[in-house]
Amino acid sequence: MSTKLFWKDTPPRGKLLRPQDVVERTGLSRSQIYQMIAEERFPPFVKLSTRASALPETWLDRFIELQAERSMNSL
Image 1 (cartoon, rainbow, N blue to C red):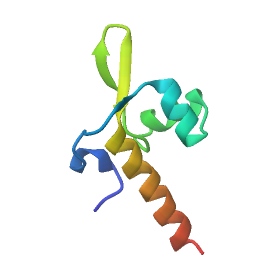
Image 2 (cartoon, helix red, strand yellow):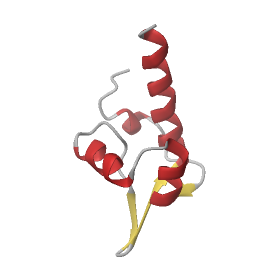
Image 3 (tube, one colour):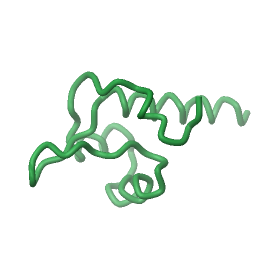
Image 4 (tube, one colour):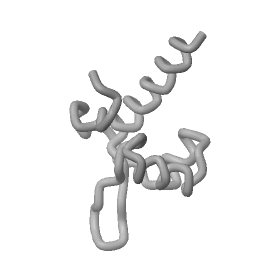
C-alpha cells in the first residue's frame, strides 16, 4: 500500500477526535499537524460543522502504525 493518502483505504471508524485530542495522542504540535496535512503526510480533519472538525480514530491509528513501521524498518 502506498503511504501517500493512506487514509483513503482506511474506513473512517471509531471515535471522532477533535484537534486537541490528536495533539495529545501524537505529541505533535497543532501547527506541525496542519503542516503535515498540507503536505499530505497526515490525514485531514473531517468538517463536522462550520466551526468543528474531527479526525476519525482509525485514520490516526493507521498514521501511528505507519510511523512505527518506518521506525522499525530504519533500524
